[in-house]
Image (cartoon, rainbow, N blue to C red; front, side, top):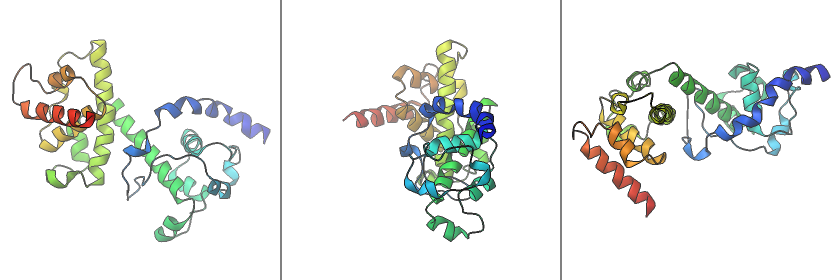
Length: 233
């Protein structure tokens, strides 16, 4: 046991630093399928004490669940590993959903999805490439928000925009509008949602929409102001 704890000490050392970056549960869709999380990260409750697995004994069960999820990720646990650790292996999908530990699998999936989105941003994936990858190209704007794929795209855009904003503030990005040239109305709507939630300034959104060059996107800027002002009331 001492050797196991020592081996895991380095992995555990960085866990508390990552808690601040954990996304709020209000950002997560209420229902995901096909290996997408159904719920966001939650705090520890008594059901976790029922989890048992020989490979997981190096991590005390008294720590919060978000720490377990992070630990499983750092130590290379796959989803199949986590399914076994949670006692869900061999159960039907319906039986898994009824199990007391199913919510922790949902949380793990959500966290891993976030890591994948982080990787897309790091490697420079564009908005268009992600939009197409998620199969959003031919979905009518009126039904976009009801799809799980659009919510995944919003999670990507939150990260994308944060990265571009940081580079813009540093001066490494000059022509901001070049990075926000979506070809669809749905992408523009996603941008507006992200900018509003991130409380971007009027000047930043104007620059992102290219309004210093053309008034082509003026209607989207008005919508951004409307939504922002509506939130303040």
